[in-house]
Length: 77
Image 1 (tube, one colour):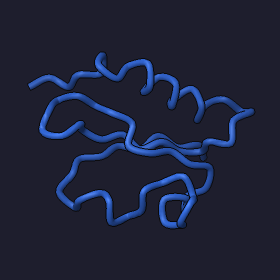
Image 2 (image 1 turned 90 degrees about the horizontal axis):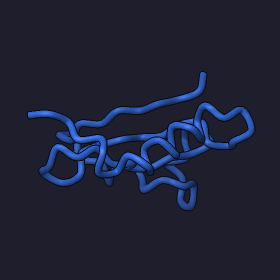
Image 3 (image 1 turned 30 degrees about the vertical axis):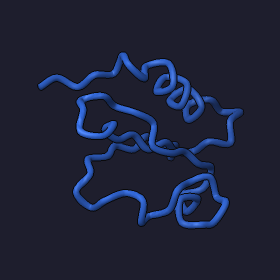
């Protein structure tokens, strides 16, 4: 099965551009599959490596991503 990047393409590209833009506070984005489909979607993004662990930090928290889910991250170094 092929991965579908076109369904959520504008949101994926916008998130990627936020990370590579030197003026943006976004340092990372997390992508995952949408439900049981082949569609890739933006899961979350943040400005600090620990944003996803803090309440109100821009992420949903480590418990919101099942261990069995496939994810990919794009990050500034």
